[in-house]
Image 1 (cartoon, helix red, strand yellow):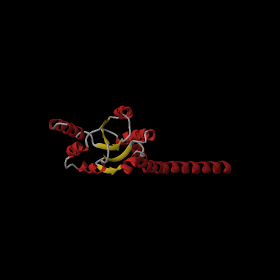
Image 2: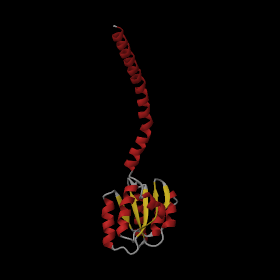
Image 3: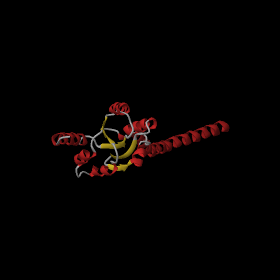
Image 4: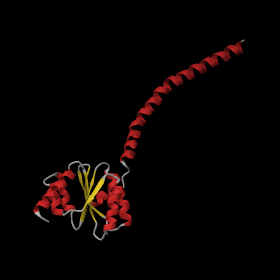
Length: 178
C-alpha cells in the first residue's frame, strides 16, 4: 500500500470516528468472506458499519484520543464495527451471529465513552434495549408519585365515607325513635 493510499485510509477512518461514538473490535479468524458479508448486511440495517483495516492505520486514525486504548485489544485479524445509535442492539445482533459462527469473538470496545474488554463487551450484549431500560426507569420514578396520589385521594374519600356512615347512623336512630 502506498503512502498516499495509507493517508486516504487514515482520513476515511478519522471521518468515521467523528460521528460514531461506539466502536466494537472483533476477531474473525477463520470466517469466510460470505459470512462476513452476511454480518455486514445484518449490521448495516442497525446503522453500523463493519470494516477490516490494518491495525497500524486504525491506531494512527485514533491518534492520542482516549479511544487509543482500543489498541491493546487488537491482536490477530480484527474487524472494526463503527456504530451510530444504539450499541446494545448491535451487540445483541453480533452475539446472535456469534452463536452460529464460533469464529467471531469480541475483543474490546468503546461504548458510551468507556473502554471495555472482550468479556465486558459480551456482557453488554445481554443488557435489555435502551427503550426498555428507559421505560423501567420511568416506572420506578413514577411509583412514588402514584402512591402519593393514592394517599392524597384517600383522605377525602375516607372523610366522605365517614360522613355517610354518621348520616346513616343518625337516620337509623331517628327511625328507631319514631
